[in-house]
Length: 450
Image 1 (cartoon, rainbow, N blue to C red):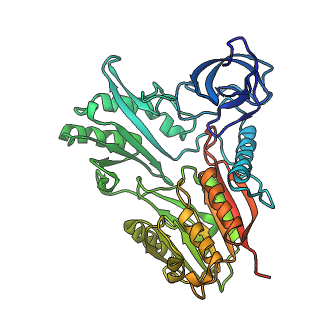
Image 2 (image 1 turned 45 degrees about the horizontal axis):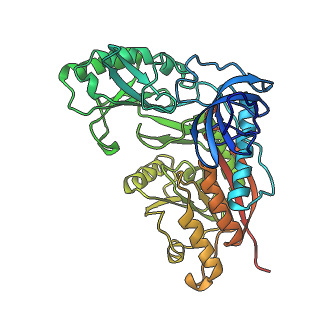
Image 3 (image 1 turned 135 degrees about the vertical axis):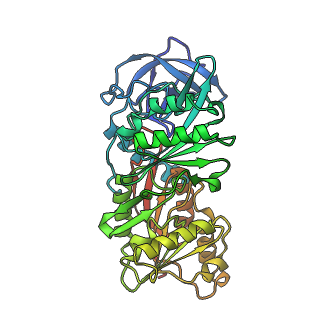
């Protein structure tokens, strides 16, 4: 058990941005607020047989990478965990987290480490889900992220990772909700920023009165935002009033415009997304005669740029409506003849399914946090027994974009140790500065049979 007077030396950061140390008994201690290289005293909140969870209460030998957090709500708000850590050091830590995950979980070491992709550290978050809560005891409405390790909504009047115009809107949104008839039945406001358009999606548990609808319209005119209403699940989202510009983002390097709905999955950081897509296409290196499959294609974020270079691209996604949207985006960008789309469950794939979609020269894989285990397993099964998919030729290269280093490492282990690939490159992407979220990209090349 860690003694209150014991000084612990912090050795590293974990994926939750907690300092990692060992106490005098050799037990691992996870320390909220501590940075590598520091010596700290702690208060232990939770004890298990093999580890303890603690909060720093005293500090000596401060890290050279410790900085003053820019946001006065840091420490209370749970939206950021690393504002006290220099942003350059954050990137290095995320790169190391990727390397460690690949090695310790997948026994994979990339032959080349790609330079991490970085971008603006502030005002970058173009998508966010804000909670709204009428707190009767305080007699006011709170709008913002949850408090750290709590279900309570943080009492925040600004947010430095949101675009400035959205940060300035937090207090007006409080006042708006406080004045509505249904103020205690409005739990959430989802934010989506496109190019020149800001949309707010209001989740309402009861039908809104005419007076409340008029309040939303007045707010929208005053702050130049679109209101969308969500009475139930995401599929029920509908624009309050027609007219005006639609949400979209662009990929200028490829001459592509991508319309989207405010509840669609898009990357929160448009600047980083542009660089990430450009790198993915460059690493994939599609040739004019090649066919590419984009697994987990979404709205076509990678499919359409790839289609500017390849002979054909097949984008595959789990949602039929999303596939239709991707097709519409291909038509809008003049790529309907090159990019086609199909819907299927990508978490249930077998070797025969790979053969059914036909051989592709290269793959782009961009799964959710669960990863692409079924896809990697199907490739491994074909490699072990080609008779499972007679005549099928696996892709020569796979570019895998990941939002979870643990599932990337798991899938990389399958590709490298069982499917006949080598990990030729990998690198981190700082999509979410000041958070512990690690986005990354890895490249796998097929080892040709001797």
